[in-house]
Amino acid sequence: MSLTHDEQHRLDEIESNLRSSDPTLARRLAPSFDPARDRRVLIRCVVLLLLGTAIMVAGAAGVTGVLSYGTVFALLGVGLMGLALRRLRHLYPPPSVRGQ
Image (cartoon, rainbow, N blue to C red; front, side, top):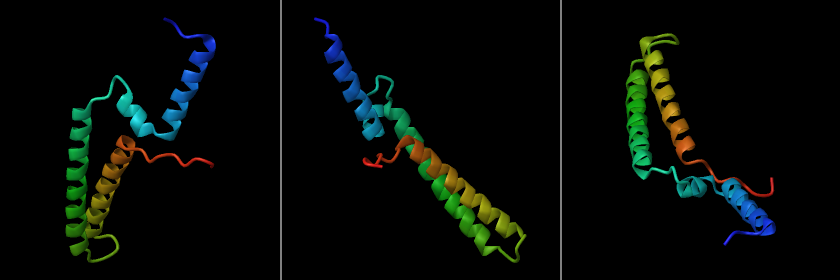
C-alpha cells in the first residue's frame, strides 16, 4: 500500500524536523549506523585526551621561559586535547536549540 502525496509530504516534514532537532538520534536511526565504530572512536578520543593531558602537564613542569621546550610540549598537549574534543563533538553533536 503506497502513501498519498500528502501523507508522504507529512512524513518527510517529520523526518526533517527530527534530523534538525536531534541529530544524534537521527544518526543512530540511519541504516549506516555502526555502534562498534562509535565505541572505537570514543575510546581513541579518551586515550587522546589523557595523552594530551599528560603531555601538557609534563610540558608545563618544564617551562623555563616563553619559548622553551616545556612551552612547546604544553601547547602540543593542549592541541591533542582540542583534537580529541573536536572528534567527540563530531561524534556526539550538541542538540540544537529551538527558537533561535
